[in-house]
Amino acid sequence: MSIFHDKILDGSTAFVTGGSSGIGQRMAERFAEHGARVMLVGRKQEKLDAAAAQIRERGGIAATHATDVRDYDGVARALKSTREQFGEIDILVCGAAGNFPAPVVGMSANGFKAVVDIDLIGTFNTCRAAHEHLRKPGASVLAISAGFAFQPTALQAHVGAAKAGVDVLIKTLAIEWGPDGIRCNCITPGPTEDTEGMRRLAPTESARERTARAVPLGRLGTKDELADLALFLSSEAAGYITGAVYVCDGGMSLARSGFALRAVE
Image (cartoon, rainbow, N blue to C red; front, top):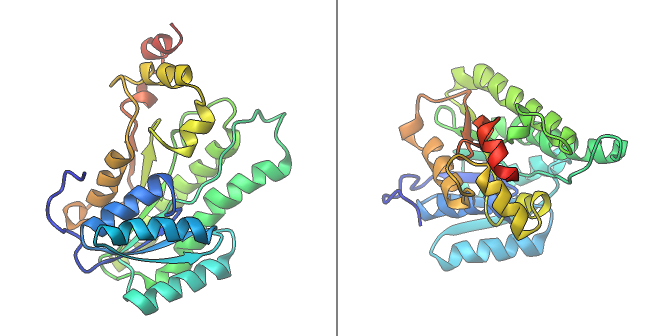
């Protein structure tokens, strides 16, 4: 349940890539709860339909468009369809992502490229194609980043490189699109419960417990907490915030020594 009680996005339109699962889906649900019409974008139509059905069951408005963010023309068609159905886009969330843990020597060139293409090129494609459809002034662009962008981590070279690019891209857009009244920010989740990332990076209960002990707040984050942050950044309450990278990780990125030692005790 959201900590916000009013429909602060009433009448707005949100376009969410990666909206059929995980963090992106929860953000889309939160936007719909607060009055936004939501377009869910992902590769698999059946997953999109299931996510949209959940929003509609709760009284929200949701549509779907299946495409791959690596396909610029496909993303452009999805944005055009959104504009035709719902009007100008107020909220753009670039949430599509790929990941698999692997050392550089154990990773193929195609594997590295696939993650960069989904995370970085996909974010560029979505933002570039969306500009003509965004409400100006007033639109909010959010990209989902990762702590690996500024804290190098073994087995995550591909994600770190891609997300570092995403951070700089969004900051650059904040400069270039600021005169249009478009705000551009990043959200950097930490270890989050019930997400594909945690299932891949901490596949066992003991691994999840060790991860939680490495977090200064002593627990994993939730998708609801990230969704509420996205809601805030997309609302008028954040009207003077742009070019920021919001780290929502319980302090894990600060935990270099003492807390890191706790994780392996």
